[in-house]
Image 1: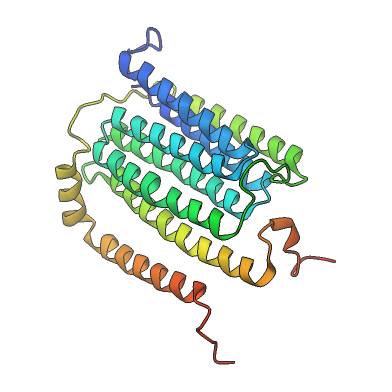
Image 2 (image 1 turned 135 degrees about the vertical axis):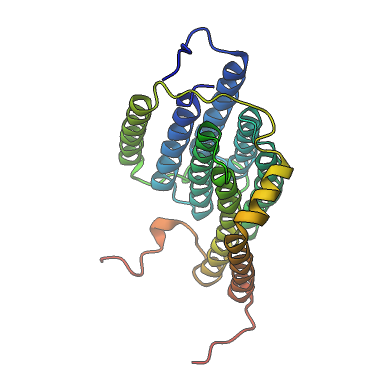
Length: 177
Length: 102
C-alpha cells in the first residue's frame, strides 16, 4: 500500500512512541501501585501523555479537551471519591483482590490477541499527517453541521446524569415506599 | 506515522485496563481502570480518523462524545459508590456479597 518502511522512524514516530511509552508505563503504575492517591496522580500522567499523543496525531482540539475534562475534572472527581470514602491515605497492601494471577493471565492474553491482530491487519497502513485536520474550527464546523442531533442528545444525557448523581447522593430525599 | 504504533499503544492500554478491572478490589480503582480502557478506545478512534481522512471527522467527534460520556459515567459511578459506602461502610468489591452465592 505504501512504500514507507519502518526503519528509520520519523521524528514524529519517535516522539509518539516515547509519549506512548510514558502512557503505558504510568497506566501500569495506576493498576499496580499500593497507594490510592498515587494511582490518581499516575492517571494524570497517563492522560497527559495521551493528550500529547493526540497532539502528535494532529488532533489538537481533542488534546485540549482531554486535558480540560480528564485531567481537570475526572481525576479531581476521583480524588474527591477517594477522600469521601475515607480511604487509607498512604500505603495499603489490600488494594488487590485474590485473583491477581487470573487477571494477569487474562490481560496478557487480551494483549497478545489484540496486538497480533492489529499488527497483522494494519502492517502497511500509513497515515500521512497534515496539520489542521483537528483544529477547533474544523471540528466545530463538523459538530454543528453534521453531528447536531447526537450533540443535543448528549447534552440531555449529561443533564440526566447530573440530576441522577444529585438524587443518588442526597440523603434527605425519601422514596415513595 | 504508521497506524500500527497508535494501535499497539491502544491495545496495550486496553489490556492494562482489563487487568485493573479484574485485579483491583477498591471500587474507585476499578473506575480508574475503566477510564484507561475508554482512553485506549479514544486513541484508536483518533488514529483511524487521521488515517482514513474522514470528511465528517467522525473519529474525532466520536472521541469528544466518548469523553463526555466518560465524565457522566464517573459522576454517576461515584454517586453510587458514595451511596454504597454510606449504607455498607465498605467499598471493597469482594465484601459486597449480598447478591452472591453463599
